[in-house]
Length: 220
Image 1 (tube, rainbow, N blue to C red):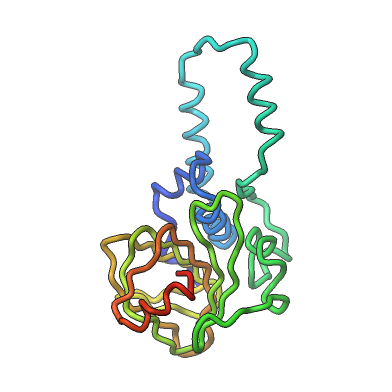
Image 2: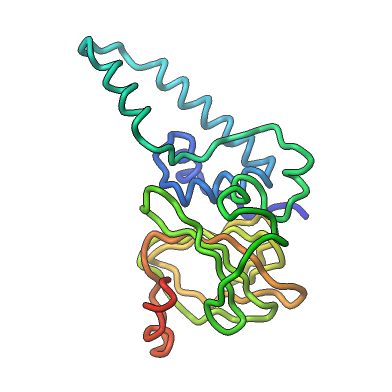
């Protein structure tokens, strides 16, 4: 099935520049594994960044700067998500693509889900920088998510099944991007459970009193 909903230009440029937070970078890298169109866009963004760097005028630096930078690079943990254009058959056939598979510890049949709510399971995805939260979510087919808004940005990448969000139906590889202006009530499609990777940089704004009371326990 053709991917119709892609990563936006500003996020892709931030990813290419290395300024995107780790959780969002993980989502973008996973999308790139599934989407040839966005891999081509990413190569263009990388080329543009290289051209801009080559266009900068040289500036004098101290004689110790190189040693200081190398020392910092060696001492800090790597939080970036690696990029790849060549995909092995194993990577293409996996339900949970790389690099996400490396973060959660295996493919779909190897995962250990935790109950988040009735008919909803999750796997929190740990990151080093902590700037955003990532979690793998599994919605039982037909489940409707409580109506909510957002206090920041949310990126959702569908991996299996389908997610109906406003006027759109998202399938494997599709991305939904929402922000403070968005209020919605997505629901999982009827044919199979929907598994998606969701990344948020701020708590959601639930409308129902019950959802708000339970929100601290959900951590969403």
